[in-house]
Length: 353
Image (cartoon, rainbow, N blue to C red):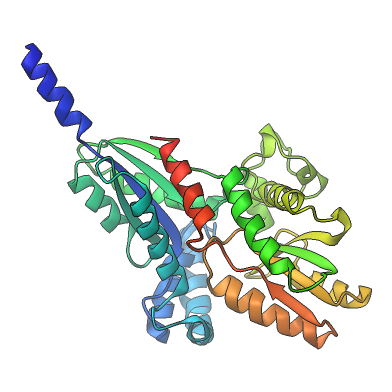
């Protein structure tokens, strides 16, 4: 290759951009029961979400859960929907738009997708592929790794890319529970919320998982679903429960919260199998017995306001708490597209470029 040809080759490859794919969980296209049913079927038929063999999973989802749960879930989504549609979707879009403003447009091309429904991962990846990007950084918007969330996103991306003739370099961000800006973003929101009252308890409520999924990922039998989560290290760095307890410890430390006032728990159970404990609902009952009156709730597994935060934690749990004699149940809003969170996402991308 002559010097001029080599220079031309170097210039052409340096002009190729780095693709960025932001992926959140997903949302129905509308609050119509049919759209909600379609969403539930795609979501729950994921073998990483309900980790049963295909036939019993198909029967459970299509004959029991989706038909009977869809009408109720559609009603819940109607409480949540705004003029802009689904908060999960438009907050993720806002995050993408703000990230585009931060990143060098000559170097990066940003796309976003939902793991389930629209915009699809396939559509977003095809957009990046057609742009001939030299690398793709995939950022699942789930701070704590779980097979049912981050693992599912990574699995789907690899499934699609497997069909490409040319597969560019790919980087996956598995978790970021200890990223300084992630912790600062939650701390900022927490400090603002703490100005309202002198709270008796600080509750950190995370989405739940079946215990069997935690055991499946246990390294050398380390997981006991108990005190093993009191320390975070090599053997439990990808244990979802351990990551949640670590997130609580780190955010609480930044806020200077007394240890005896901080509680970690898990919500959103499905089915009769045991899920990771303690359950949020059980702690609400325990608070009533202890005479707890004022609770501030964080939901650090969710970076955008959604059904699980706004309705489940912000309304349903609040109602239960107040019925049992509680006075103040306040929810810290999700990160959405806050300044520090945008800076965190920017750093997660740039540091891997």
